[in-house]
Length: 139
Image 1 (cartoon, rainbow, N blue to C red):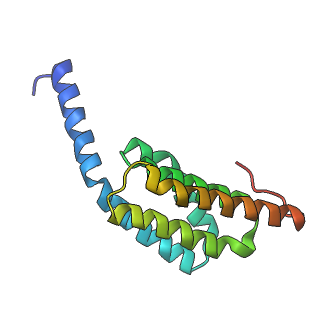
Image 2 (cartoon, one colour):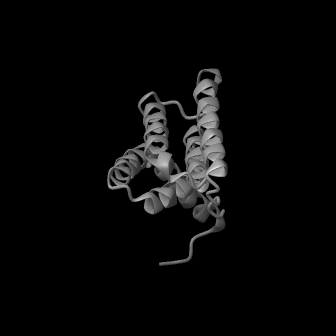
């Protein structure tokens, strides 16, 4: 087989990326199911890793709202307030699933309220951890 041209390579790469982006909602569905199972099992470390991965990946794949919510969940874990991880995880997962079901890919005026509420939740977790002298987890 002869080597492909630069233009052919770019066209193939573009087609692959389009396929990944088109299939990303299915990937999110599977990821949210896995994250819910991790939360039910109280496997916080694995859930934190999944949130951290989504934080960077979702925006790149066309779902920046999910990336923002995952960033908030990642921040919630970093507070060290383990007493509230279960509630924080549920709220964040519910928000991500709602965005997926509603095909809300990007922040908009309607999502600003719940994004603000997630920030408030993480802020309260930080305050609780500080009052209890719980060291925040590393970045």
